[in-house]
Length: 449
Ligand SMILES: *Cc1c(COP(=O)(O)O)cnc(C)c1O
Image 1: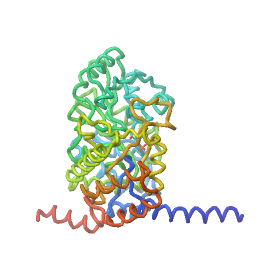
Image 2: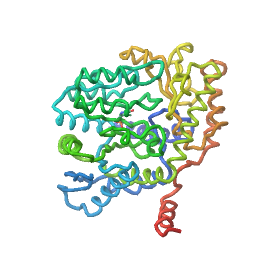
Image 3: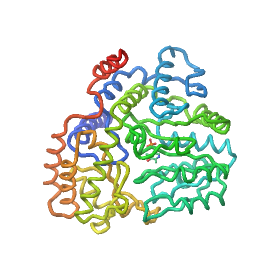
Image 4: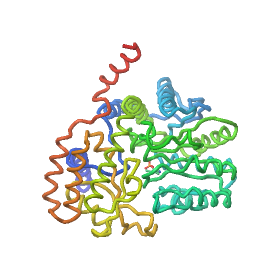
């Protein structure tokens, strides 16, 4: 009994401490973690009843609620339809599914739906070490859960990108049902328009995994996958898209080929892989979409600027920042080879002691099974950008990182400076400070004032 109560106390204390540690005393450079505005957080707190509800059922070909198997749906249906419409308008597409609870779940539904449509088990994917997500891989969801067979895109280490000419040959020879683009280490736009016709002719659907870059796409930077020829976008809603943790699928119902696929993807969502769809996150996801509609372009541009500023500065100071021949990055991320400083694991752990949080990462020339000792680190700038970091703050942050990486100062000492820098950036920009502020903005806009 006493053990149980002690554990519960420990839980509460750790939860309280975590909020202060990661939200107020660390600088977060993990490329996959978004930062929610005060308005988005307020909306999450407001929807605690919704967080307990169910809304199982089918949707129509716009992504609207068609049939639900529960009572009490009067407002839930409105909420689901509104969030679907906000996402459809933000991404200029005709069909959205927002019932996915994560990006991995979105991939599950799309890969399953498309393999039902094409009756093919083959998919052409980026190698893991070159940036694909584990859910695309034969060692993860695609292989071990769905039984799909991976054939790898050709990858150019020099360009840090898929090699379009060689990949075209691979797709023609393999005749896969799915060709994927997008990934977790993702510096430069993938060659979607160069390869879409090759994929279509081979009988494949083109899936673009935008988990990392969805917020950049909303802001009109990086690339525009649907217009470039992607049939489906799968994504998380909590990386550069600054909403609560969740998933989404987007598509344009252009023709019968897509219609057939959408129906199978919807079947893979429900009944195959959902019961509860975590409704409590939906209104806050809608508020994040609203923020991107208004501030998304500025936010995306500044995020990429900050990443490029850091790339240039770290490079000038002797670090091996990849993608140097193309300006280091066109996204929110950098990849740095830190083998000279003990490798990715050591560097990430040293920086953690200084309260700078980022992750070690495989680089394209690493053995992809060697996840313990990767050569690199990945650095993301979406969080600090939202906290208002611009050129000078970014350079100062890089100086602090360099001191730790080179062993010039003790991480414990640097930590004091990191906490002070974090405290200087108390306000979250490119978003609303409260729901009231968002409402006032909307009411003015609707009235056209
Ligand atoms: C993060 C990520 C995912 C998985 O998203 P979750 O929401 O964490 O399940 C899928 N694909 C890519 C490319 C990712 O980076």
